[in-house]
Image 1 (cartoon, rainbow, N blue to C red):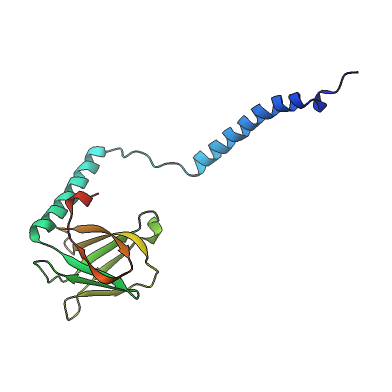
Image 2 (image 1 turned 135 degrees about the horizontal axis):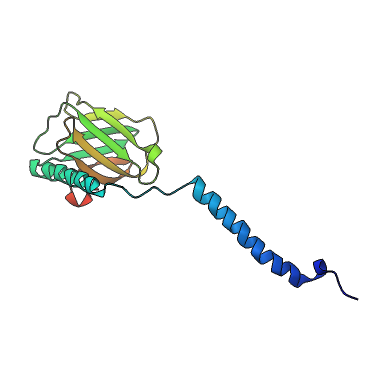
Length: 164
C-alpha cells in the first residue's frame, strides 16, 4: 500500500524550501520600498564647491582667532567669547544630533550685559552633539563635536579637519 504524498516528510521539505524563498523575496521587496536609501548627489561638483566654502569659513575663523567657551548646566546654555574678537551682536548656534535629525535645534543668541550668550533649553540634551557657532553674517564658522551636559566650560575653537 502506498502512502499519500502529504504524509511523506520529504515532500514537505521540497515544498518548504521554495516557499520560504518566495516569502523572503516578498519581504525584501516590501522593506526596500517602504524605506528606500537616499540617492547619490546628482551634482557632486556643486556639492564639492559647497564643502570647500565651508572649509574656507572655518579657516577664516582660525585666522581671526575665534574661540568660545561653552557649558550646559541645569538646562542653561552659556557661551562665552574668549578669542580675539569678543563682541558679537548675534550668534547663530546649531546643535546637530549624530543619528536623530529630529533632535537638531538652533538658537539665534544675543549677548547679555557681561557679553555672554545664554539660553534656557527646555528639551533634555545629553550625549554627543556637533555644535556649530557662526556670526549673523556667517562669514566664518566654528564646529566641534562635544558631549553634553558640561558643568565646566569647554573650549570651542575652529578645527579645519572637522569641516564636513
